[in-house]
Image 1 (cartoon, rainbow, N blue to C red):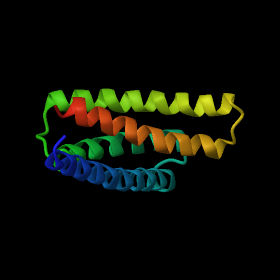
Image 2: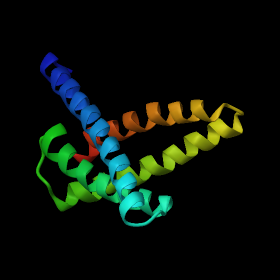
Image 3: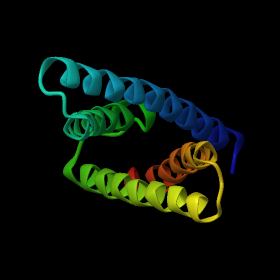
Image 4: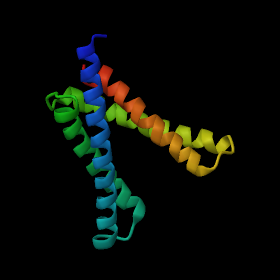
Length: 128
């Protein structure tokens, strides 16, 4: 890998991380607003917030993090990777629980695993 390729990969990774922080905050905001102004139903609120955050994440990551065009092919791949990340998060949390770890360590494991997993797949599959 050349230094230019390494620099581009680092830039994509940094942009991906910043987008993730923004989208996480957006998810929380949408959920809180939904609960306070629409319906006091946290599971429904989080479902709506997840959908909003996923769409915004796709748009920002496609156009900014990976400098690609919005396209049906990348959308399908993005959604597949997001679904895989969801199931991996559930598995990692389950494995931590089965191992008898405190739930906070399970959350930390999810927070460290899922962004890396999704970035690698997006970088080498979704946007290639």
